Image (spheres, rainbow, N blue to C red):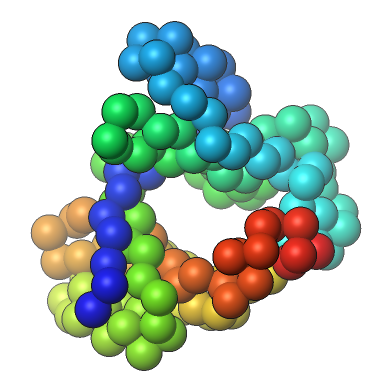
Length: 150
């Protein structure tokens, strides 16, 4: 199975500030910084006022490592222990389903495994140890760049 694990930080409206801070501290390269206003289709084209410039997803390259960040989504509240998740990136939907099911044993589903505009299977689960995992599969069009998905 082709798999990659990446730490993913969830912030409450301060992701832009954190991106700038970590870029400076670690001399990181910003691979991407996407705002909620860049993904209106994920909100039925109705992003709540004041959230437009919050970070939907950011990707930093720090040496040989990666760090990803986002702000909480409208209506989502911060919970202690859920501000750092581990993102599991797999190529096959079948692998995503298997990992999601395995991590869900005696755990809790926090976002159903489902298709989105940027992934054929993504979801989030808290395992029996309280660790939160995001599972995502690469959209076939991602090889051509995110603009091909809109």
